[in-house]
Length: 115
Image (cartoon, rainbow, N blue to C red; front, top):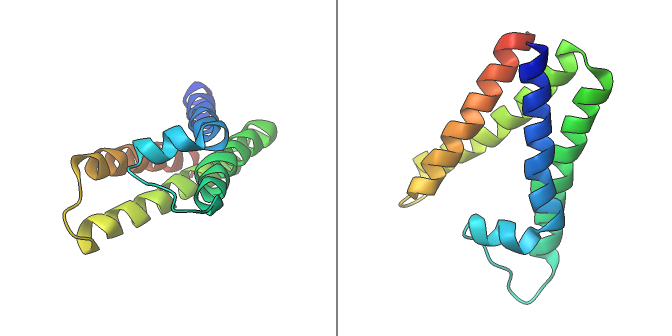
């Protein structure tokens, strides 16, 4: 259980590093673009980057089941947004389904072993 918690927290941190330190790569991977402003880069650095770094670091620092569960709740929140997109937005892509499956899996694992 501890190894899985640590691995998933480190995964959150690693993926967050892409958003934080490589926002253009992240935008490209997510099929997003900026339009005449740096706000898109700022948003990716914050919401897809440093936020997940902070979550992972916090869970590792506190090391409690509740801390790791909070990481699971965050991934679950992302999954809710992604599933909403699948249900409401026109023509979701294969990538949307893959990302939703990953987010759901991480959320379920973290919540199942920590609640």
